Image (cartoon, rainbow, N blue to C red):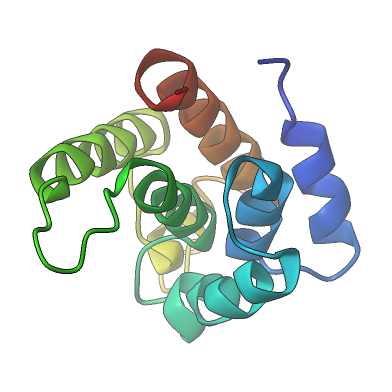
Length: 139
């Protein structure tokens, strides 16, 4: 897959939050309409709306992972463990690259030391998702 990270930055520049920027960049890989994916990921921006939670860009990549890996079987869910493992992989690699997965830490709230800008977090999350997609999610 050719990297789409610059498309995600374009979306962010249009006013999409970090989660929306990542998720909507790959919406063609999902079976969800762009409008529904946009709505679904709106609350994940700004670290869950208050900078205290997981980076929105990472949350967008995690949402995509679930959408693409889940069996979707409401009666017999069987893919949780695999999805959790892939999600952990994204989180671990992002934290290793950037020192944290928490929005307030990445933005330096309280410390004044910015670990990573939003555009850089978006590009990192895109690269991690693309790598995972190529290795495990491409069907």
